[in-house]
Length: 298
Image 1: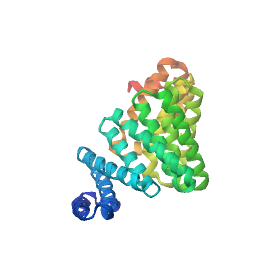
Image 2 (image 1 turned 60 degrees about the vertical axis):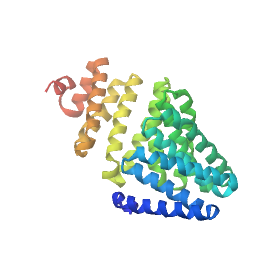
Image 3 (image 1 turned 45 degrees about the horizontal axis):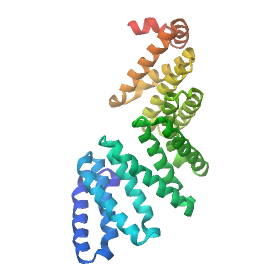
Image 4 (image 1 turned 30 degrees about the vertical axis):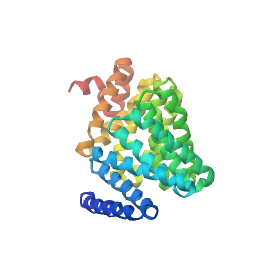
């Protein structure tokens, strides 16, 4: 039910499964603990997906605790499940603003998934890439950008490897990791690196829009805005106008809820114009038929 979007209907059924498995664990803990841990993990995920994150947290904690217990009994059998629960729990903590608590849990998930990749690279590489991406994002969100950058680079490298194996499946993830890397790199002064990643993210999301416009258009427009901002950081004010004008043009096709991106494009254009008014006006006029000075005053 959850997978076809009927999450609200799925919740009470998921609750029943949890309750029954709790009862079974009371009768035979060894036999049913793995199943209960799995149901708790899934139920916490479902609660989070419908926005009930505060309720999901204690359920998620229980799943983590049970899977830690199972790993003590049989590490090989249960380590993948524990790593998954730790990853999800860290994400949940971050979503409710408890990032400092999420960090050590996220680190544990990364460490476990590194261990699993050593045992079976093909099976566990996608999960490691995801955990590295999320951990880098979390580090950046708490202001530890210098530490986040090498983790982000590792995620990108793994996603490049995965894209070589299956472009359709992993291109969105690679584009997302490159997009996140842009801000991290720019904020620590690595502008050339940020500019390269930004251009790559735009190109990949343009490709994705060709495949599925409705799904990927908001991400593409956002990447254009960030690319414009990155060009400004590199003092390329005139060059920045082109992606920003494109963002404004195709952004008109976005659904209403996503149109706040357009305000970002205008703000970045203002920044470019303030730094180099004549250059920006000339490029803007060449693209639109009027100067930015005139356009913004209307």
